[in-house]
Structures are given as C-alpha cells and as structure tokens.
Length: 201
Image (cartoon, rainbow, N blue to C red; front, side):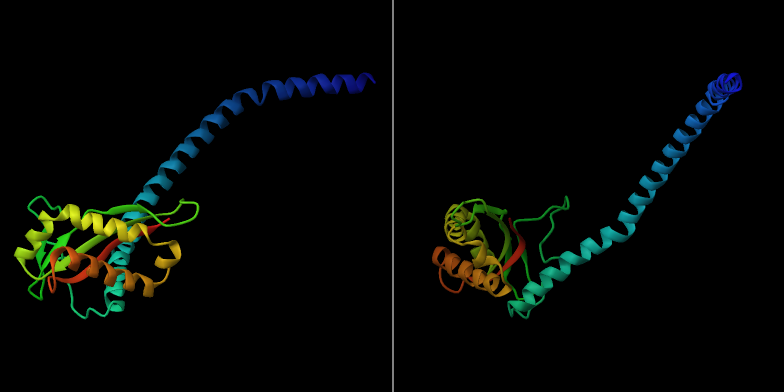
C-alpha cells in the first residue's frame, strides 16, 4: 500500500507541473494555427467565389433569359450591350432604349403581389421589360404608368402558383400581359414583353 501511495503523489506532481508549461505553449500554438487556417480558408473562399462562381452566376442569368425568349418564339435578339437595356451615364438602367427591330424598350419596376391562394402565403415578384413600337409609345407608357401597374397587378394577383409553375404558363402570362397593355395603350403598340425577373415563393 505504501508503494501505491508513493506512486500516486509522484504522478500528480509530474502531471501537475509538466503539462502546465507545455499546455500554455500548446494552447498558443493551436490558436495561431487555427487563426492562420481560418484566414487561409477565408481568402481561398473569396477568390474561389470571385473567379469561379461569380462568372457562372452571371452566365446563368443570360442563359435563362435566352431560354425564355426562345421558348416564347420571339426569334429576335436583344440589342447588343448585355440584356438590351440602354444604360445611362452612371451605369444604371434607363427608362427606355432602342432595340434592333426599331422598337423602344421600357423597363418596369419589379411588381410584388400576393398570389391567389387559399392561405395567401405565396407571392410573386416579377420584373418586366416592355418592347413598344416607337419612342412616342414609350413616352405614352411612362405617362400611363399608374394604369399599366393597375392592370398588371390585377392580372398577377388573380394567378395561383399552379398558373405560373410551368414554362407554358409563363409564356401564356406574357401573352396576357401584352393583351392588358394593349387595352391601356391601344392596338399594335406593344410588340413584346420580356420577363427579366421572376420569383414565386
């Protein structure tokens, strides 16, 4: 028994003194390694996103818009310089711009409506570019923006999630929007509608 008691205090003394100095050093070393590792991961993540994912995200939007246009059977390309919008001097979107077909492109602010659902929990955010016949019609569209928004909000709020789920239904929605805008502006003035943003949640 005496031998066991002698060993126990010696182990405690060795364990109590020996790890005290190395544990502080080990703790500092671990913290430095952890900080360096986090910094390396952060910098690597930033550059990985900047060079790989940011380029893919930009190309994805163009591909989606091109598929929407092709599915709509428009057959015409948008004006050069990106998405067909005219940019103002500060780099922002201008209200209207000329297209290749001679028409004017007018960007509407995004529309946000609740969908016609029994529980009323779904909503639609829709961004549109309207191609009209000429600059006079573009000015007329801008002057009648309240009527345009009213007509579109009434149309969109009557839709349900199922009405917007498939690509065929989105193409049908574009045709319905042209019909509503024709009621506001008159015959043969609205050429096409481009969906620039659509979120259904």
